[in-house]
Image (cartoon, rainbow, N blue to C red; front, side, top):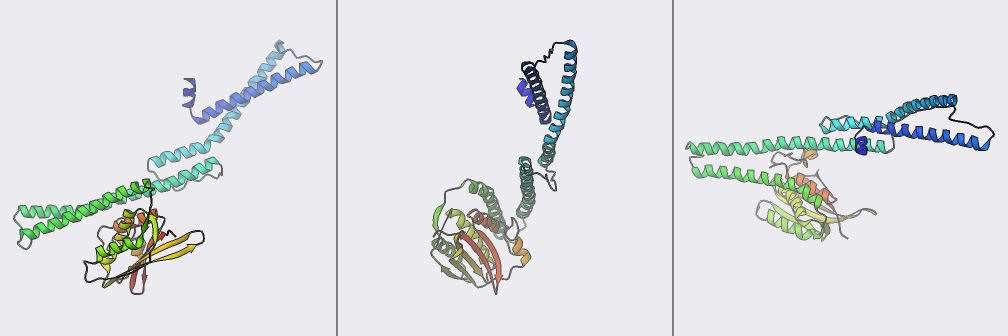
Length: 348
């Protein structure tokens, strides 16, 4: 019971008591040892039970205790001051009151703890902003199709039809429902994606040439206005096939939406460096309009849409998946073309 009650006291108080007891014990041990040594090694004998001597010794011990208490208090304050400082900062962070900086000029464990708390705050602040943006964007993205569906349902109830046709009106409602379902599906996919990626550690060897031929054929063959050109080397990567298919499919879907006449897909094996080994470079090229720099900067952000974008989620999903596979993805303008480039570690 006493141990638990002591543990519940402030750390400074615990250190103060421990140091005080330690100093007093050391003083008593030194004092007793000194008297015993003098009595055993010299002709001079000290009788501690002498009233005058005992009184002086008692006064000395009281002085030692007072000095010990003061010294212990100063030491405990010095030791616990940075901890109290960090505790106040962490309490603010817990209430989402972000602090500009948490700096302690120390290189010991307390300094490392302060650095870790600072990094934790950066990540929490980033997540908080992303959550706020996510909720705002979600509200905006879902509000429009819901309002359209609601208005057309009301129109049907009132006997008002598009082009005086019930079928046309129902078709519009159906299109909005399908679009809403697609948005919700992508949002659910994002919600599960991070959890799945964190838990997934079983990578398989994947032949990219075969995967890309399948995806390109499925997506491009039904679009007669777009010519497809493939220049694919036989390359292998380690990863989760279903996730990589989604990542590449999102880029292809984007290119098909903006291409005028053709799409080219080129894969080649490149050497990064002696230590990093080989990479597979996947270039997905279209002859659509150039993408402005300010758009390229944000194109892979969540809910960011270009001029003809659908939901602003596809390229964000691609980036998350590619980065999980230790690769990277970026976009650039070159000549009359727009080039998406995906780089993934290659199995040699």
